[in-house]
Image (cartoon, rainbow, N blue to C red; front, top):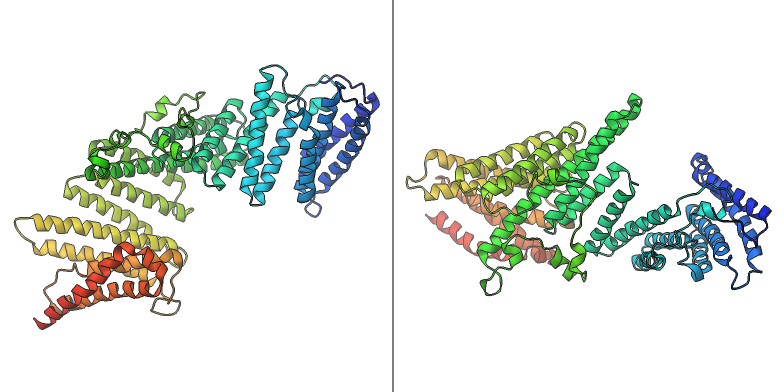
Length: 606
């Protein structure tokens, strides 16, 4: 509670308090009940009262001496009114008026911007202007305003050094003994500043900076205990995906463990609550839904770790570092967030200790490593952990209720097997894992109607073709390295795998036919050009891999192969953008179109 003002009569102060309370009730309570045909009724009423308050305060400001001790409070009172006028104007879509009021709020308190009575209003006004300019698609201006809010908060904390604490809007107008927590209000406002900064940095493409602000927002929410547990967990798990895709596996695991712990605690709280069945079911549904999402993030963590391990080992085997020396960060598998920080013009120290000290996460973190795998024995536990999380996610995301998500989970399961195969030396076990991939993908495909799920079916046809091709390569290599030579069974198996690959590629290609025809359109959708041309590229290869004694069949397969390569070359010659997309494969296609006709002629003349 602030003591009564000398420069404003007590009856006016009481009137201001009464009007402030009416405005608060209109904005916080009654506005939620406004009818659909008059959605801003309460906000317009609040604006009328706020303008009356503005008139009263301005009238009594005119006679204030420049050294009057009450100037900061009276300026803060006017600033509070201007802030509310600005926010309500934005709410009723009067954007220019709202911007003007918010700027007036800041100008009114400029002299006292670091004063405990004014700081909350200054920060809120800067936040609101930052949001406004972000919505106007001017993230740079938004960043300037939000950056100023962040710096103003830091300046206030440094200036106060634990002395006077921020005063809330309620205490500013109240003449009663009831007191609001201004310091808590200040910290909430600053947390919002960090949250908005995270969004703007993300919009500007400063991904690491955005991630750092996201983490700090989450940490402050934890410390203040002001957060929705499900939203918090989902945000933490989502942030983990950024770290995992930038080799920050220690940080990724920590954020996933934090998300899991918060969800577990929330479930315990729900289990203890006595509510109606309908209310509890709704809360449990939301919990189960988001728990499945966090499970999928755990699985993505494992998949990313296996894929990074594979890439690292390939780099090591190629020894592509200068002078044949492998950088230590690759050699020992350490993280590269510090490297990313340097390239992002961020101090490497800022990416250290991205943790939540208030949470005990050791048990959850030890369930899976954050180090890259070097051998199968190290890769397998990562694979099993990720697969367990996918199995948990499947309990919620079923084909009956969430077909698209269920298929994505099955695709991730297939990718896990694919990553594990890299670490497996035994060809028979490799083949078995490819077979498992095929079973998973074909099960998914068999439950989808292409008429309704065509984009997903295209993905599955393509992935199945790739999987059959990889399995064929293993069988062919095994046959070639065998001292006994090919057997009828092995030849049949190879031809069967090749035929399946061809079938799925043709399904993919035919799905792109112009409606009502059996031919492709002249121009393919941009995002489908490379997949289509790759499908023809793989077809050209597979048609040459059939092992058949019948010369007519051989000739037909060679012609099919030539046609596939010819389609790629013709399309690329007509479309320069396609030529750029297929730069690595186009040279091979042209070479094949020189060699295969010669082979075809020799076979025809034999």
